[in-house]
Amino acid sequence: MTTDISALLAPVTLGSLSLRNHFAMSPMTRNFSPGGVPGANVAGYYQRRAMANVGLIITEGVGVDHPSAIGHGTMGEENIPALHGGAALAGWCQVVAGVHAAGGKIVPQLWHMGALRKAGTPPHPAAPSMDPMMMTESDIADIIAAFVRSAINAKAAGFDGVALHGGHGYLIDAFLWHDTNRRDDQWGGDALRRTHFAVALIAAIRAAVGPDFPIIQRFSQWKLQDYDARLADSPAALAAILAPLSAAGVDIFDVSTRIFSTPAFAGSDRGLAGWVRDLTGKPTMTVGGIGFSTELAASFAEPTEAIDNLDAVMRRFERGEFDLVALGRALLMDPAWVQKAAIGAPFAPFDRSAYARLD
Image 1 (cartoon, one colour):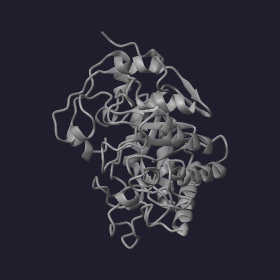
Image 2 (spheres, rainbow, N blue to C red; image 1 turned 45 degrees about the vertical axis):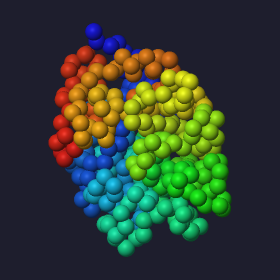
Image 3 (cartoon, one colour; image 1 turned 90 degrees about the horizontal axis):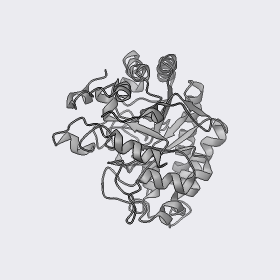
């Protein structure tokens, strides 16, 4: 029996962001932008998803305008796009135009890899990789300014907002996590003080782009270097972290979990996106394990099947846990996934070779 997902296919307006439906494409590093410049193949890749009725596209991580932002990381990243320089901006203008022509909306995910960037790797091998414990006041100011410049460039290129990569152990998240931020100045200390970097960054972007340009913040408990890591062990601890970020200017929280339905805290089956939505009053996006039998990391090592778990998605959506449903691997394997979900058609099978293609 086909799950009725008509509510997810209905238009939705979240603040100043109006979408044709509740489905989003989650950011996935693709490594197809030599010299940081997205070409016609990248524009076609995103436009195909928009043509197949994806409401919101969040691009792969885009390096902010700082020498230490990107390089080769723990996932073997290279050829990561940038959002500065004439050629890169021209390339993104073509990406945006293609998505808009297909009726979709698109935002770039602004990214600083922090200490997960391997030192000595291009495009700026001489730049040291940054982590909270080694950064000076000047470093902090420079990186915040780099995010602001990139957000301004995103607005100028016609994007519909910006997304900040604030999860998975990358720089913004590294300031939030007690294991990587042991500073005893204004940028570290207890959970509230560890939010100061993110708050300053968000507030600076908000001041630069104005009140009506959406800011989406990725948030996660897990880290690439520690899947079991937690920023918060209770709803109260979570609220203490999220409230300053929300007040600084976040419009939508992109809540990244390995499996979207995993209960966030003992005593409740509510997922993390539901807790974030309840505690902040802001719209949330859920992601993790939708459409497949395994979570992302396991799919590299275990047999993985395409499945229809939209009944579980709808149950949580209808009880108000999240506003948007983001798909990563599902849209990588099957650009028409949303259209197929609407009619109950079978999804394309999991295909590991898709990670090396741009189609």
